[in-house]
Image (cartoon, rainbow, N blue to C red; front, side):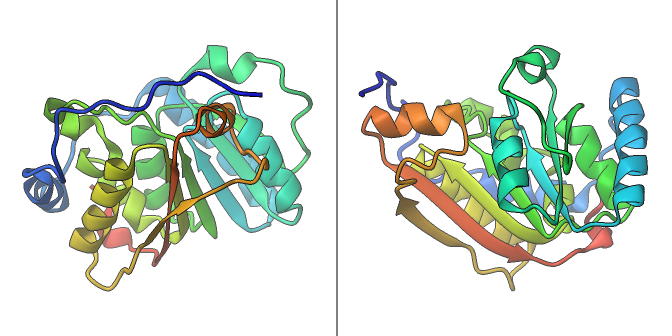
Length: 227
């Protein structure tokens, strides 16, 4: 079976020339955006579950319809997997029962990451699967590595895995990680899921013949990176 998904088009010719400035600004500033009420409520609720579970934590950030959260919970049965997405509609779609060791949470990542770092959550793994690429050059600040919340993402630590069908996004993300922490050595490579798709997007991109890219980085928990 083939899928028909267009490759990403961008007006950039390489790594964004303002990437270093964006990361440096995020690292040096105290970001004061208020926490959304629904994010705070969701965080407080799931924090109780995490405390009572007393199991290693995995974050599935931007989990969409939650297929990846379900699959990660099956892959890591001794972990507590939290899938987070801002869309109630996506999270409500029926993709089967949620495993007992998983939760789907509606909240904004820009809030949850800051709350989680402040609460000293220390995930063993953190997945970012096919985030919105915002491929136009003027939208760098909307990509996670160009966003003011990026330091909190890095500070949470754990084994970070980013997947994308846009090589430039992964390349920029790797450079941003080393700008935030020179001791980090991200591993970036093309990969084939071999039919073991974690998300519907991954399946669509792969069946469309697009190259998929994956980044791995081992990060250390660092509360000082709280924006």
